[in-house]
Length: 105
Image (cartoon, rainbow, N blue to C red; front, side, top):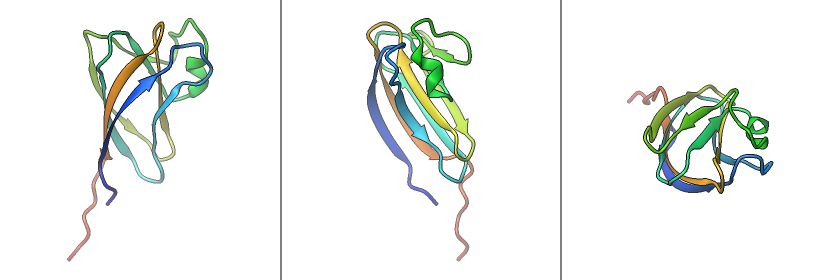
């Protein structure tokens, strides 16, 4: 079983060409809870190039300041990337296995 983790990250603005990598799943499905704790809308995407353009909309999930939390399950090998509207934003994340498998005793 993989350890759970938490982190707080500053994300760059959309169109900067370098969105924040929130998490990338290895060989098992992972659950990631994302909370927008900043003052700007944060865009989430599975493809970092989606967030490289200034006018982001397609293939994104908008995490506004009024709708501040979301839980997303990542398939093995899938990543989650973020960029903020305007000058960027701040998110807190909690990551754990999506389907924990215990070891037999």
